[in-house]
Image (cartoon, rainbow, N blue to C red; front, side):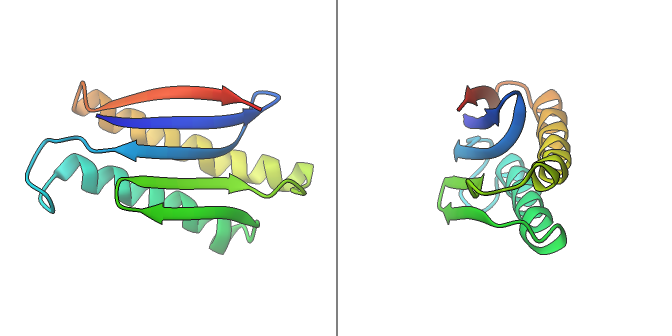
Length: 109
């Protein structure tokens, strides 16, 4: 199962950690893992390359993290929140199509 932990500050998303595997196919052929990876990587690009917001990013096999830098200003947090919420909507759509493959958690900081 893939776990998506959304980090929130005062209710607003400021980062996420995605870990695990969907186990819906052989390694390299798992459509759910590929879809989740594409959505998550696109969100990271949206934050860093499109919005030009500084974030700590770590991408490893089965573990991806993206957290806004502590000095992010309110405008950056708002713009990043739109990207994070879009990512969450995409992942929830995958979850609806493939029940039992993703679970969501919120972590308030």
